[in-house]
Length: 374
Image 1 (cartoon, rainbow, N blue to C red):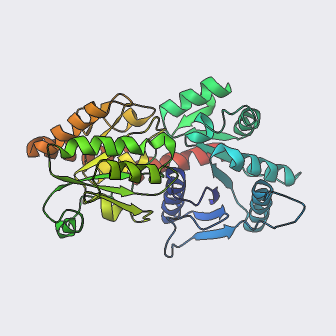
Image 2: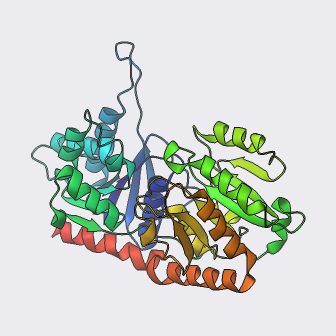
Image 3: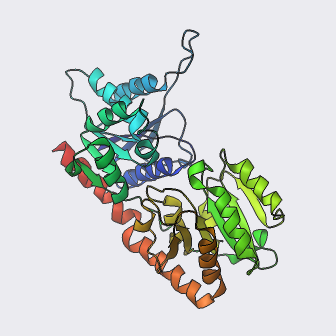
């Protein structure tokens, strides 16, 4: 099959999953064409049968804002005609599904390929529910021949809030390359972050308000009262300055490292002893999946689709949203007993291999494509 994939190229779960999906499909013999305004951040190096088509956004003085939606539609249309795409698969409902629908309409009498829209989270739980966006979001979802959601939670939200028939939404979970995200083989690198042998606590996100990164700081501060530990914060976003300010207020500057954005997070996760995810809501929790694939237990808030990834009491511990003290107790419990930590670590790695490995999940997309083409 020739498959066009559109995603946001920036740091985030949807772009990471879309990119890994494309790379995985190409490895299975399909021809993959990424269509975006920049090369996806995880699309590095050469991959056979993978192509990139840049959306060029023209600047014109009459228009105050750029017309990414229209430029994307034109690029999807042109790529479909030139490359003979069999499937167009967009990640995020708006504007990507909207642009792909416009591209299909532009093909007019010519056979437009089926449109698959994968819902990832804030496209329907936050942005799409805004009054000004909700009608176009619902329209774009329903004009897709195939609709997938990354969790049962997200499917339920879509069905409830956008009146989408439940039988039209297929749940295909996010996945992880377990060959890449694996326990660290060289523990010597731990000394970079923990020179005195401290435990390494880690958080990775885009530092948006929904991630509640200040809660990460509060949980770590409580853990550190009992267990020598250092906190590694990976990523960047609007709430990073407030998180750094709170670190200063708690006089934790020597124990907290802000690394900024890092494309190869697998190099870091394998060094961690504990992963913290304190989000208001997670449509799935890709970072948590990547952590357990590296054998790192997770402490997080019981919100959204995260309980579909983290089995409480097995590969991580979940507490109510905002329960900072309970989260700190959970983290201290895991870090304080090597036998408990080892049991949780092994269970997490086993769950990643059994349920969420690329080879397990990716064929579900192939089957869905073939179903739509029939």
